[in-house]
Each structure stands twice: as C-alpha cells, then as structure tokens.
Length: 64
Image 1 (cartoon, helix red, strand yellow):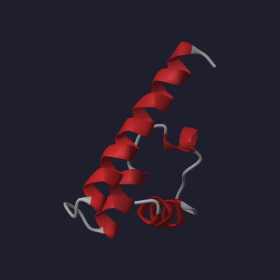
Image 2 (cartoon, rainbow, N blue to C red):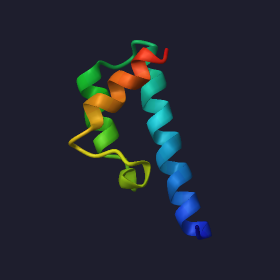
Image 3 (tube, one colour):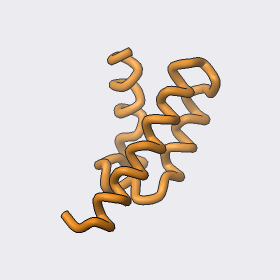
C-alpha cells in the first residue's frame, strides 16, 4: 500500500475509533454515531458503508 493510502486508512480508522469511544461513553446516541461515521472521509477503506454501518456499530458495542 502506498503512503497516501496508509495515511488515509489511518485517518479513517482514528475517526471511527473516536466516534465509537464517544458512543460507548454515552456522549452520543447510536443514530448520531451512525451519521458521523458515514461522514468520515475514506470510510470505504475500512469496509464500512451505508449497508453495513449498523452491523459494525452493533459489533463494536458488543465487544465493549
């Protein structure tokens, strides 16, 4: 993977992790977290899209 793609992946992953942390801490509700996740740039690099975002959030919450 190229440096730019790695950087984009890391940025998307960090943004996703921060949103999930906020959700787990009760700072945002699930719908807000979902909307925020769908706005992350380069989200597709993480394999997350509109079709599976709910499932991904649920899996992350179960892992808590």
